[in-house]
Amino acid sequence: MNNCVITNNYSDISELLPHKAPMILIDKLVDVDELSVHCQVKIDDSGLFFNKQMSAVPAWVGIEFMAQTVAAWSGYHANTQGETPPIGFLLGSRRYNAECSEFTLGSVLDIYAEQLMENEGMAAFACRIECNEQVLARSQLNVFVPSPEKLKSMLGEKPEKEQQ
View (tube, rainbow, N blue to C red):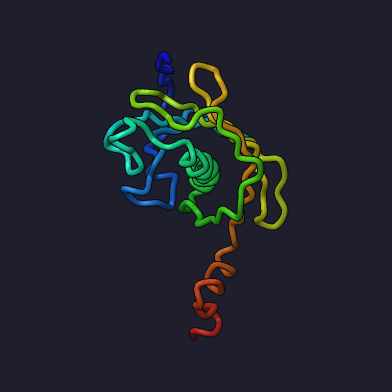
């Protein structure tokens, strides 16, 4: 398998995700627009889920690559509004189908996500992972980004009005 070419870089990916190392699994934002996003990750032996015996990352980690790509989309749009990347929740995936059992060392994966619908913080994204324009995995992710007030409530914090 030939490696894909890494192209553009919009921003340091850590500025777009609510994650901290070592949980940041994707490398960069390649392209983004109102409803879609393209990120990349190069599989290397320093990755959190890299399996040295397989010399690869198991394909099931693709769900998290997809989820972080969606988070990068959300973080980018928050960043353009002068806001910090919001905390979101992966509610589930539908029909995760991997055409391979692993992502091999040295491969550059292109991860794409397109928003299918959104309603009051709930959204669905069609996602796929490719290398050399060959689809390696597909899924639909269902996500939730709560409002700041709802997040405080979920975390058991009192609303600002009650704190005074």
